Image (cartoon, rainbow, N blue to C red; front, side):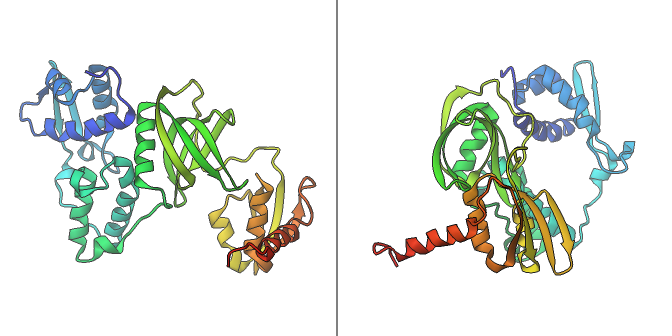
Length: 324
C-alpha cells in the first residue's frame, strides 16, 4: 500500500469512496476501505473528517451537508437531503456548468471517451439533457497546448519529478533548453501554464505550455526549490516600464497582456506595463501601429525602438533571398 498520496490521488479516491460507503447499509469497515481503495489510514481519516464532513451547499446547515460518522472501526456516510432532490438548472446555468467542466477536463486525464472518467460521463449526460447540439455548441480550448504535452506535465507534477524542456521565449525570440522542478499546472486567461523552479535561470519561472516545443519526463525528484505560489506573469521590480496611450480599438491589450495600471480617458486609455524584453515591446508596438502612442519610456529603453524594429523588418523583406 502507498505510504503517501498526492492531493490529486486523494481526491480521485474520495470520489470513489463516498458513493461506495454510502451504498453500504451498515457502513464500511475502515480496513476494508483501506484495502479496496489503497488508501493509507491517516490520510483516509483526515479526508473523511476534515474534507467530506464539510461538503455541502449554502447555507451549510445540517440538512445541506454530507454526514460522516466514524466509530468502532466503521464508517457511515449519508447524503444530505439536498442531494436527494432532482437538480433543476436553467439553460444558462447548464451551459455555464458544461463550459466549466470542459475547461478542467484535460486535468483529469479523461478527455477521451475510451477512458471516460466520472467527469466526462457527467458532462455527456448534461449535454444530452440540454438538448441536441448543446454539447457541440460549447467548446472550450485553452491555448494550443498538445494533449500529450499536458499529459506528461500532469504526470510530472503529480509525481514531483523534474522535466527537460525545449522552450520558446517569446520576449527574446529564442529557443532554450531548461531543466525544471515541476510545481503546478494551471490555466489562466485562456492558456495553460507550468510553474516551477528553472535550473537554467536559478529561480521560479512560469512557462506557457503552448510554447513548449518538447518535454521529457526525467526520473529525478524535484529539488528543495519549490515555489510557494504561481501566476502567469510576475515582473521584477527593476524591469523597465512603459506607459502607452491606446485607442479604444486596442483595448484587447489590457485583456491579453499583464498591465500594472489603467487610466480611462473617454475615447482612449493609458496603460502602464513592465517590459521584460525589448523585442517583446517592439513587436507589440508594430502590431498596434497608430493605435498606440508612447507617453513615457524608461531611460534604459531606446527612444526609437518602434522605428528601429520597423526598419529591421523592412530590411528583411528587401533581402534578395527573402521568400515571397
